[in-house]
Amino acid sequence: MAKPTSSSVWLICASFLLLTLLPFIEAEGNQSNVSIDKIITFSDTDGKNFVDTMSLNGTNIERLSNFSWELIDLFTLNIDGSPSILLSGEHFDSVTPVSESLWEWSIELNISGINCTCQFTTYTDTSSFSEQFEVSTLLVYLGTSNHNPFVDTSSIIISKSDQYQYIIAFDLISQGSFSNGINGIETDGMILNSEVCQTISNTCLDNPVAIELNFTSIQNQILVSIDQQNISIEDGIWLFTFTIKDSFLRESNQFSSRIILDNSPPLVELNSIDKVNESESFLIYAIIDDGYIGSKFTLTWTVTDPEGSSRGLFDEEFYHNTTIELSLNKSGVWNIQILVRDSGNNLVKKNISIMVENTAPVIELKVDGLSIHDGDDIKLNDASSWTIDASSSFDTENEIDEIIFEWFIDNEKLLVNNSIITGEEIDIFNGQQITLIISDEDGQSNTISFSISPPESSEDEDIFTMSSLFFGTGLLVVILVSLKFLFRSKSKDLKLPRWGK
Image (cartoon, rainbow, N blue to C red; front, side):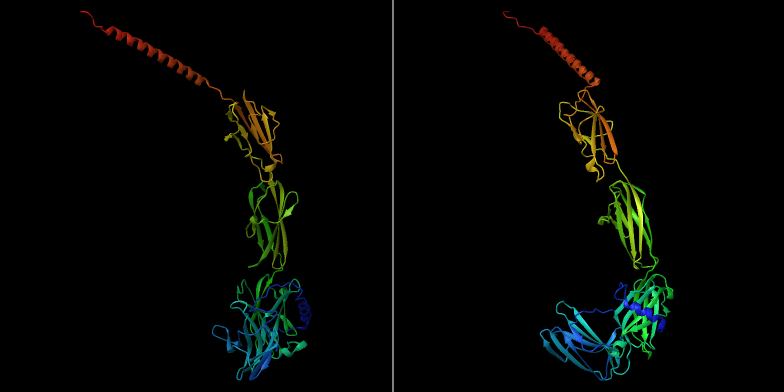
């Protein structure tokens, strides 16, 4: 339990003045949607007391064709934990047009025997969206007892006044508070019960611990001061749970606020390889520790090339969470920077330098579609047309258009600076030694040498040709001699008939 002290009032009041100027940190609770222009409004304000009969009136800016209302006891709960519905209906007693788009309504209910802290709720069909309703509510105290203070959880605002000071502000409704005016809520005799636990998603990681917190009021608003150093809690996500007891020890509804206390910058480390070749993919890992479970942070990467030009990451360079994948196509020293911003707006910058080494261009050489390698001996017919093509040679993307081709014939440079030469540039009658050197803009080069010459018949081929000739001639002689003997033999055996005998 804690009571307001005079020494803390000036701090809380000063902090409250900053509520609308300081960034919103985080507030959670059973918050309802608040409409700027309510369809139904009430003439009364929250906290009015009715005995026996409750008379309400107000205005509506749409003609009411489909609506309903309920009277709900906020402190008497059903088995499922929901508030009890005491009365309900589907119409007002009267709806009177005032102007073209404005109507006045009124309703009177018999509440004899009802003692409660209740909420009168209207549900209005907006007609514009299927199954969507606008809700308007009014907190009322009915009868003469069971009148508890009530915290409007939709009004909770959390702000940070300095490095370790936080303010939780909320509207507190009590019987008759609608008429308090500038004097506001009387906090004398009021008790604030507070508990805190570390959390991730509104679930305590350990048992809640009771703490004492100072508070004060401005009109109908309660301001609770949280000094991280005084209550000795470390950075983390903390769930603060509150109830308020008035001077008659009547207890309010319980409500919670989740606050991220983050006053220490995160620890950041970048890891990667020191050297990489042009256009070779590599990863950069960021290791980030903000000191507590559930911490969140945003990352901003900057890539600076050797010439000093900077850029952000391309979509395809995001690899996973705190890891990026780069493929740098320019040689030199690149600088990679990461800017880490945590939930407490603490900033940390880290840099890492990567040496990108130039790679030599690669020669791809072909003669009429046939690949050529260093040291090859190519036979070409001088009488036919042929092409030596190095256009498939390649380098990194940024240097592919800057490749220089240099051709040498028997160590004499040709006045040709393109990737293709033909038989018109080379006389191969006696054979030639050809050398190709390709270079990139960084001076890296690659070389290939090969020889070309006209086709020549070999000694084995000549022997085979002469052998074939002699064999053919000998075979012909044998055939002729055989035929001659055959005819002679047949001529001796031939007997002619004798005539005349």
